[in-house]
Length: 490
Image (cartoon, rainbow, N blue to C red; front, top):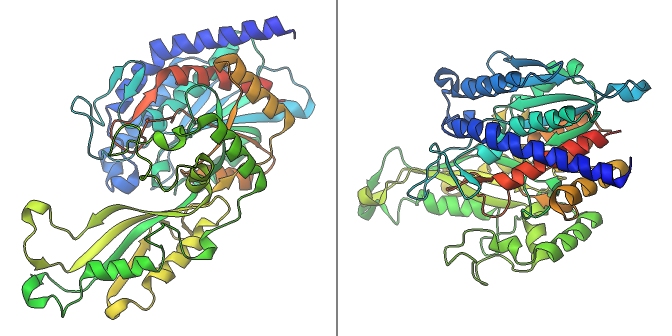
């Protein structure tokens, strides 16, 4: 195929993606954002509320309405587990021996994080608003768009008569809870998945909105509730303080075993790993592209661009490594405190924190969870009752991270060609600090598969926080780029 034909194909794919987003995807996502389909971790009665079933059914109907040739779709429901959408679309490529069995797996999720506070006065988590190319609201970018973009990428190829391999889709509804149900579904669906040659995961981020970004690594995570109990009930602080230890002070001592509060460095060496040399080189290359945007992308309290004293580092390389290859602790919730207006002079009976411990890509999540529980609970100060309950199911506590396999030459070339065709810039490589449990599961189950992990979560998109948005122009170009890479799959 000559260069002009490739250029014409790229333009046709882009035009189809543009039309699909404007006419079909944005309207579907607008309805989706309006549904508070929170992940099971944040809605214990999710089954009774039916919202996860609703968004899965809505997405399934949308996919079936596209009438893609040969499409088979099922909303799979294992007993007691969140639903999963599975679709299967046969190849349009002529059969060619073993090549005819190769399959592309496209992944996304439909469950959402909770509301959080601080939304702009005219915005809200469940009140979608399209403004200047940005679609605001919870879940559109993380990750409701994935199933719609995946089908559109396949449709674009078929409409242009561009041959492609078989494509299957796996869209789950408990990713924001650590994907506890996913292993059971992968096992149940494994006979239908086939020979996975390429995984396209549309649940990641972008360093900027000017080029295609390939995610090279993901951190793992251990989350759970740490609780320190001192009293059976609250008592007068003037009467008891100095004799009864503060549960908050005990909490501080326990956390000091885990983290150096001055630097944020995690103290157990087992929670660290060496950074591969290739990832350091990629971080240097990415730092040269992004510069101070690496840290200025966040909504610093002192102003839109932050200040030199606020980040842990303003060195772009160190910033990239810190947020992708080093363990960090965050406290994401608290219990046992009165609100300020009702905070009387009472020594509180307990303090509880929700902990989120991000782990480097090569650290085993389950082992880290077991070690963290031992570290926090053993030999409690003042013999206080200290408990740590990690999230997850027995035998699968914690989520392991992921380090991408070496790129096959065909994929490296296809990614760069797609980025140049759809964005006019070469592909960028970046690690992500978030966690997608599926990737480590698939890496174990399909060790020969190539991985295209990408997404629309670029600067200021603020997934999980207030004013979350989906950058629609980037979504359009990413969809066309995915089409090109699928077509290039050998």
